Length: 356
Image 1 (spheres, rainbow, N blue to C red):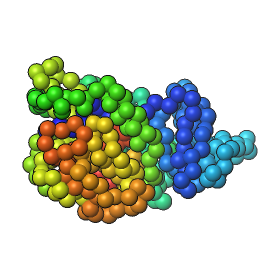
Image 2: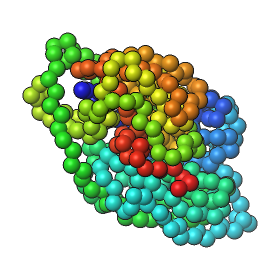
Image 3: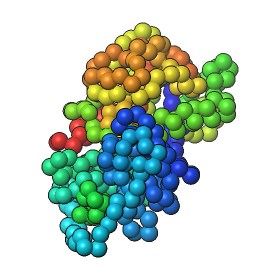
Image 4: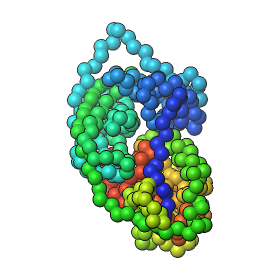
């Protein structure tokens, strides 16, 4: 079984960062204001939320003043008469621990009194954290399948509503290898004809759009639900050899083989972020669960999800099919964190939400 060739493409912003506001409007913000000169991933933010960026070791903030206002992103005013708070040391809680496997999930939590927002820096990229009213911050990060085993520093900075740094924390995270099998595929000429450079480029462009914005606070509770019944035909992270060729891109999801028409349901509560046809993944549905977490359902026979609507855990969203590049009917199920594909079965077995 096939589906979802190649690692997820995380968009890299060049000139402007697009911030998707709570009301649905998009505002272009100069990259240097939103993320610093090095850039980063955009996120869906609420009215009045503080954005953050780090450049040269200095944290700056930009506030969204009003949805739809083209000049709504401004640096917060500072006053020399206002004392600068002394940042406190944050004790970081890492789950499953200071070691995380390639293709797996790392949850970060900390208590940060007085924080209104927070940023995380890991492997050279910046991420947001969700901060609750109780001052607890939370985020989940994924280690890409093409990462190498190494030790990295994780840095967390918590900001007040005015943009002042109120807390900092750091931890060493060791990325370790995960042994996974190789999938040796034999495709017919018709099946192989789907996998063209043009199809790959189109798929990459669609993926960049799908992961250009994320909803805010997480909506789900508990482990994810396996979205359909059937046998596991291709595991997450398997290398690929097509018709005896060299081992190439890793498998970005979990394939669940089932007869055409078998119901497919939402793995967790969320908002339907995208419904459409992809050249390789076929008929697809993407759900945004908040906090940078999305799930994808691919090769569907038909879809019954409506873009923009909210769905509950177990809600029907489509049927197993054989659209796109496949060798038979199956569901290609993906879970992504800030656009990075991670092992879906881990999310079906463990709870990564902020309340545990």
